[in-house]
Length: 283
Image: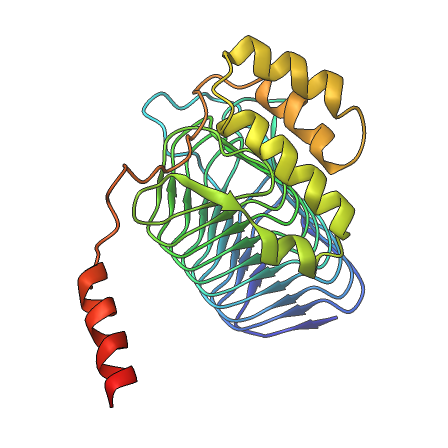
């Protein structure tokens, strides 16, 4: 264990083996730090925080801060963070609003500069929250989702597995698994095909997801019919994730971006192409 002499560590905190604590860090009582965690300078671990092993925390990060709420209860919940995460500079993660509840972050996640995780959020494993990402209270982010820079996610929204959200998007409804959201419009623009391939999904699994995607967004079915057919046609495989996700939620679901007929800008006329071809033959 290596604790800088200018750090303040409560004797009531529990630090594991091989922990490094940099200068000007503050570790309050009722904090558990797992083996081989590394805290750079000015890191603050507030009471009610539990860290798994091998977490790396950069300058200015505050974990376990009070919820930002106008009616603060006397007894708060906790923050529990799994192993192998990286918190870059100035990240903030807040405790759960109610005693007995927990703000949870899984394992091997990357939270980039200024990422904020509000009270009662649940973040899965191997996600990326890019610079200035803001998660409101009670947001859920499933495994391997990618949330780009300056994305703001409204309270109680859910982000599905391997979804990718473009930069500066405003998320006010649930985003299903495996899809890609355009940052400008905030609407779905297809499957996250690059992410699926990089994560080892087979051609057959991707084809199944494409079929399920068309069922949801392209066939014009009533919502109850969409759910019935998803359950009947995709009982297994990655597309089986759609039915349970779409059967739940309180804020509705992000829709697909559709280009209106004739929206494509035509740069040439057909007559121009015919004239060019005649000129080429004549020359």
